[in-house]
Length: 558
Image 1 (cartoon, rainbow, N blue to C red):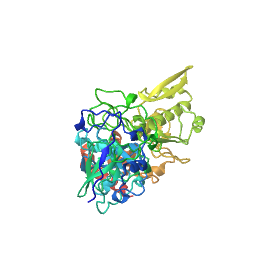
Image 2: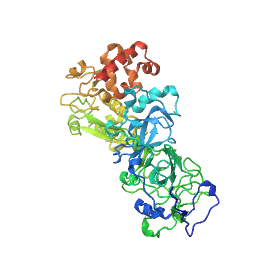
Image 3: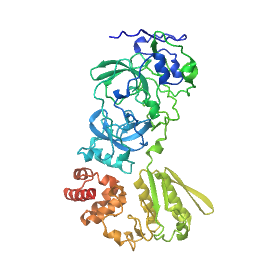
Image 4: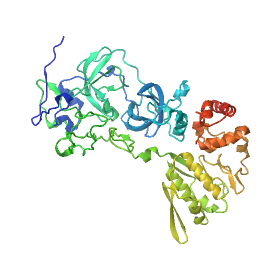
């Protein structure tokens, strides 16, 4: 057996030993590697260590392309209950990884997965394989409300397309790691971080991951084919940010000279602190320390440094009011920007504009508004109606003042008037709001979710007259004869189109159509409905529920 080379810990001249030796807490003086960008090449040379071969890891030779976007929905295994498949939302991105939050859970249980993980799938995968989506462990609502919560969650949401999911690489045939080999590993106590690490020991099919420069507080055993360990240089390939080693870097007995040239010195950004004693590092076991004046002292503790993100390592996260217990990402986007639905509304220039709108002005309006945030698109559509009116006061008086929405302006009585629209809660809300506005203006439904051909109307378009709010316009008989639009995927139907389909597919079901508006069930949600859900949560009798199930199954087959 090869005799190990004696090693010693680097002791810095100005290092002060602290009393908390048992806590795993390092010296307060940061290691030289924390002064700038970390270089594996220099680090391996200075430590005399060897990188673990890429064949040891269950990682793709070429890291998977991460095309996910914040706000996308997908299916994921609940990490705290891996027998359950749940709906998850992408709330952060970094390198080849995505940060996920289970819908119905809070922000204290976010977790990270690689873009080629076998634990994430596009929406519909579970049902296709005979499974059923489950509420996450610790679901914040009553369990009985899960089916309707699920429908509302998926209604109008952006689904991650199947093409951006990747097949997970095969596991190595055996454990080929050796003690002393270097690698990159996820810090499981702060999983947003990937750090330099060493194979500390082997135990059958398990590997002890020891983090360089730390006294063992964060070390862990994992299987040799774990997706949490990566070959040296992985972060450089993916654009992720590799954390520097801790302050107790272990070097050979006769190390080479350590100079400032071993790193590209840059000043770290000002510290963003996190209150001590919360989820993440235990008090006294923080991983990155601020030297000197760069960090305000807490009560005997120093806050975590949010690492400086290189330009090639964009990270985004979704902060919520209670994010103090979640490690901060390199960059953030506003909650409103992530959660706000996007919509594109098309203008029907060939419908009857009624007595209050000017036909000529309507023709000058754009063919569509958006795509964009639903609240902005709603404002553009309503403002267009105001601008196209013979008397702007007429349209203005049709609007009810709201809170939290965009501003509408109108000029009448020789002065400018403004009004705030209501907060937009969904894409369906936009279409319903515009439909009601057109009804009040006694014109055709001028706005819809689909483009309009010359001489035709939107599928959901009706001529609104004082006596009949659902009278079909002439020339629309082909749509009246068909239970659903032949040019459109049922999964893309709006709530209004679903209601129209229910009314026309079977006259017996027509009285139940309003239930679909009440529960905001659009085409995507319709295809997820089952008879037991309709009976339990929508109050339908067995007969109508079975009839609807029959028609839904027909839609799925087409």
